[in-house]
Picture 1 (tube, rainbow, N blue to C red):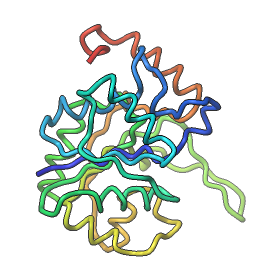
Picture 2 (picture 1 turned 90 degrees about the vertical axis):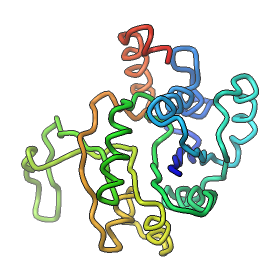
Picture 3 (picture 1 turned 30 degrees about the vertical axis):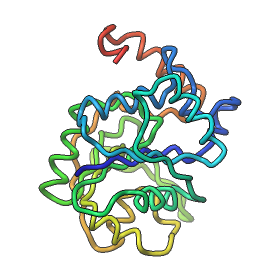
Length: 229
């Protein structure tokens, strides 16, 4: 069995809205519904665990009451850091083998092919994460001053990040460290390696009001068939 942990543990304070960012309307439907549909189109049989802030469980149930097809297999409470939220999600998964994807609930445009590619490569190599080239010039800042980095050697990391389930459970058996910025960093801290796969530039993460405007514009440009999927 393969699994998805959909991480939506925050309350979206950076959006300056009373509604959590994963529940904000995008094309008239909550952002998270778009995200779920991408994964169900890619892998219909995924076992899905949703990680939510404790204050949002009731709101989620109200949304699902109006859209029963969006129900998930389990809803768990997020933790203090992303690390703890993912670990709570892992604890909610049934015992057994397979692959597990960790995905940001506020990345609603991930391509079906990207999801499938990550699962395929993780099945072969144990772990796969999608990356895209860095478009901006990046500068390193330290006590010596600042200097540009070679953009050709840099990649921006996206989700879903997909792993062998048993191995990832073992990796999350450690104490939290501040260097754990994503799931791949937890995996690599145990001496394991990750395979980089081609991500997609449409895979926008909605974290600010400006991101939501970009998402609305992108949705309006997609074909009716894709935009309503």
